[in-house]
Image 1 (tube, one colour):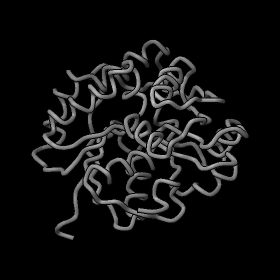
Image 2 (cartoon, helix red, strand yellow):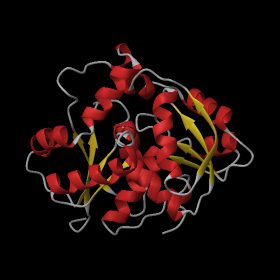
Image 3 (cartoon, one colour):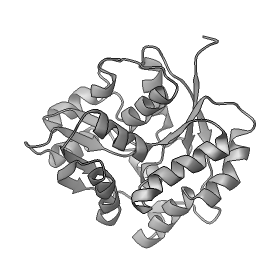
Length: 252
């Protein structure tokens, strides 16, 4: 165990879905040594559910900005040494145009001094790795936010051929979604022409729902939890497998 590589999961809201990551990390073979590192929201942000879509977009953009990460990450890490870090906030990693994903990852590397990824970067990496061309999207976001994610998917050469936007209020709300609500969103987002379904939200508790989600989608499903942890294992050169964890962990 002493040689196990440690990954820091950069996560903004305590008790809003990080246990889903820890659950899957523990089921991987070999298990991933995952440590949650909480990063605070900007000081004036409390509950996203009380904000307009314009205010939500601004809050998410500031959470993932270089200035904010430079300010809060050193104290959040508290001197802890990580072999890699993963910024697990999908919507804060897809808002800043075609260059924003890479710029944010470079900021994370510079501030933490170790390899880094984000959930959006991980989705792009997974889409390319699996050579996907046609995907469906089960989006919990407002349509204005979803459009940014669709753009990031398009940059990989894939096309979103069908999507549903749930317009959920906040990460706290999403963390409380019961399994049947997650499955229903995927079912409504299904399309017979899709090679795969994307479910890009890090607050959802979906790590134990893979089989149900795939039945509802009619195809394999990539969740935010799966892609983030898979990209992290790639960063630390620790490929892993797991049953009922989607196509990325089907073989090492």
